[in-house]
Amino acid sequence: DSISAEGFCAVDSGADCGLPSPYTKILITGGTVVNAHHKEVADVYIEDGVILSVGPNIRVNHENTRIIDATGKYVMPAYMDKAKKAPMDYGFHMSITKWDEDVSKDMEVMVRDHGINSFKFFMAYKGSLMVNDDLLLEGLKKCKSLGALPMVHAENGDAVVEGQKRMIDLGITGPEGHALSRPPVLEAEATARAIRLASFVNTPLYVVHVMSIDAMEEIARAKKAGQRVVGEPVVSGLVLDDSWLWHPDFTIASKYVMSPPIRELGHGKALQAALSTGTLQLVGTDHCTFNSTQKAFGLDDFRKIPNGVNGLEERMHVLWDAMVETGQITVMDYVRITSTECARIFNVYPKKGAILEGSDADIIILNPNASFEMSATSHHSRSDTNVYEGRTGKGKVEVTISRGNVVWENGVLNVMPGSGKYIKMPPFGYLFDGIDKSDAAYLSSLKAPVKRASASD
Ligand SMILES: NC(=O)NCCC(=O)O
Ligand SMILES: [Zn+2]
Image (cartoon, rainbow, N blue to C red; front, side, top):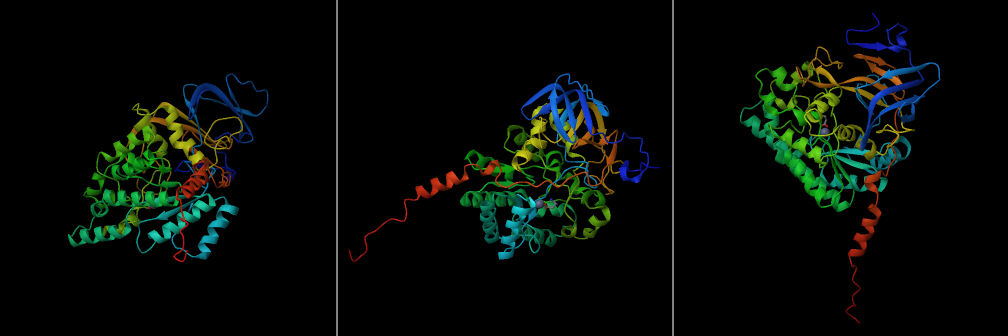
């Protein structure tokens, strides 16, 4: 059978998947085309992977044009999920875990020659990935000089080790010990510290996986003071709570172990509110899965449970259901926080993140009236668990188009190995605009050095 039990169809298999062959021309008709600041009922015409035209009643005479009827559905940009063998375009950020001249030079090469425009610094994971303030400062300065965005995993790694020791001493060795050992105050402390160091260096900062009210409020305070700080919540932090970590079944409890931890009930709703008002700007997946065998490494000691949860194929559906379906955000906000903001921050807008003439044809068609149900038995990840097990909701992505190729349709991933292209992301995105001017203002504000008469005068 050319369609496997997982629902994947490899187009290079030579088998007939029952799917249409790739067209170079696609006309999407009658849908509501949504961009971050505007929506309209319109057709979208795509040729060779690029959007050539957006407007009402587009007429095409060409042969071999695939017509996709999107009447009653939403047509939205840049859905970077569903990637298996990368059928979607992608980019990378790199992590900096040590500091010397070679690392500094490598960062230059990565930005100049390889299209990397962001670097992640871990303030936690002591003994492996963690950076101290000294290294973080060097990294922030280097990022600024290169026009690359520094990102932080914000938890106080030294205090986390202390918290872990406290739990083990209390005989708390199960997954609940993970949340108890690294409470929100440690996330807030590191978030505040990174924000203040970024302010001291005068560079923009991106805080990944914001999980708590406490950390979010540090970001809100900095933004209110005019600092350029981007806060990214992830879908698990928006809709789950930490009660799962107390589940009596280790296999279930351990699948919710991630860092910073999923917080008590109430944090998710507050993060959603911050997202709807713009305090937090975009939603990530932080997709990092381990199967139940891997999670079981920490059966007797929560410190050994590998950190991470799924979210890649769930993000769009969960977010639609939790925030658009409930009326908290508009469909245009949804496009902004899932797509456009990301493309702008990482400096690839409007090639990505919009349905405009000349943009890449990366498009989803979402049916707001269709419902979904999530389960490890039906998801496309190879993991045997899913943190959204049994979750149902409204809003389903029915078609995904990547650079003009239909890669997802009718629940089947029509994998085109290699069709997803690595996207080089240029430095000095919009967050760097005007930094030179504020640097100059700072220098002129110093009124120093003061010229003093020498003692001999
Ligand atoms: N977030 C998490 O627990 N896993 C992914 C790795 C990281 O960013 O910490
Ligand atoms: Zn992280």
